[in-house]
Image (cartoon, rainbow, N blue to C red):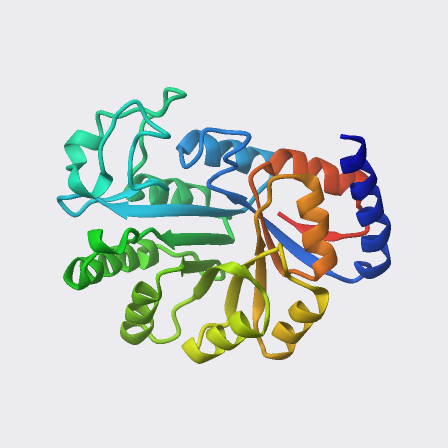
Length: 274
């Protein structure tokens, strides 16, 4: 713990020298999965009440073609049921509750919640199309078409709604069918020459990369190449400050309330947007 505090103090001092004019957008990852019950209405509502207007979520498709808000393909980790989402029907999954007692949420419910707020300005909708064998080409196209239609149906003017994925197939399909659609490429690698080149080759101007291995020079190069950089993970306030130091444009956080309070009290010089 002492070492962690020393590292954080060093990062704070360093960031203060770089971040005078830097604006960073923080968004609540799965509604704030380390503070709340991930990907549930209660989590998004709690983040909203705390002041967040940016979120990330995950979408899968049931056996009968319904879009459901779940990160994992298997229900075991987060719910009181077992089974593979893509091999179960909507009716079966609606019987499940999270381990904290909330109902599993479907995309229609999340979109209705977003519509009811009217002032949400940023949402990342992650295409959870892995394992790939669960989404062969025909099913992938059905998934993408349904997701795009529902997300964009009532998109507020001026809001940024992005389709994000590490599965190039879904992004390519959306890109070909809907030129100009907002997308972000997720990678388990840092922002570097390889991931910058991949984004450029795919015609995607947003890169979601890991902080580990990312340098300020690499982020600067990405900016020079016209890319917007989002870094992850965001599991601590030290992660938040490291992301600021590296020059990220966007940072996800699993601890939205803690990060917001920290940025306002310990790093007020950072132009943090929530």
